[in-house]
Every structure is written in structure tokens, then in C-alpha cells.
Length: 85
Image (cartoon, rainbow, N blue to C red; front, side, top):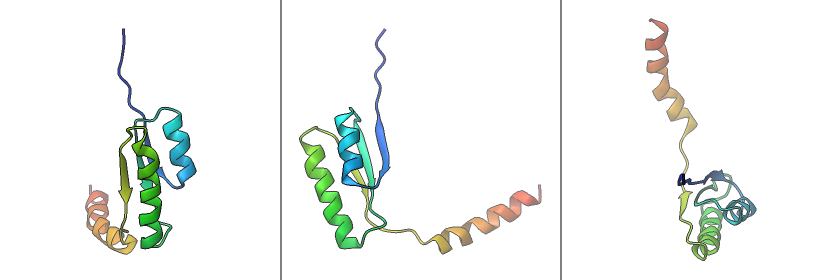
């Protein structure tokens, strides 16, 4: 029996991560350049896309940032509600 399998690199932080995953047979990658400036992140994304294109591997990129403060604030009402149960 044949079972189709897909391997996805989630939150690859370096171009080397991307290259290793793609060469190992991963079928898609998501890169995380949040540690970079916006301009560096775009350059990193372009390098990843250029590399992955020849393998036919799609790339998803995080080009912005979420505010941790906003995420914590929005989670507080849920946490309070769950404690009352």
C-alpha cells in the first residue's frame, strides 16, 4: 500500500534550515525571520524563495510581528472565565 506523505518545515530560522529540509525531501517550508529587521526579513525570504523555487517547494513567510502584550491582554478574559469553572 502507498500512503502519500507531506513534510513541512515550520518556523525555519535560517537559510541553512531551509536548505537542509528541502534537500531531505520536505515538501513545503515556513520561515520565521522575526529576529531580523523588516528589510533583512524580506531579503531572507527572497533567498529562501530563490532556493526553493528550483525544487518546486512553496514558501510561507512571517514578515510582521505580533505584539505579545496584545496577545496576553486578549487571553486574560478567557483565562478568568476558565478559572471560574
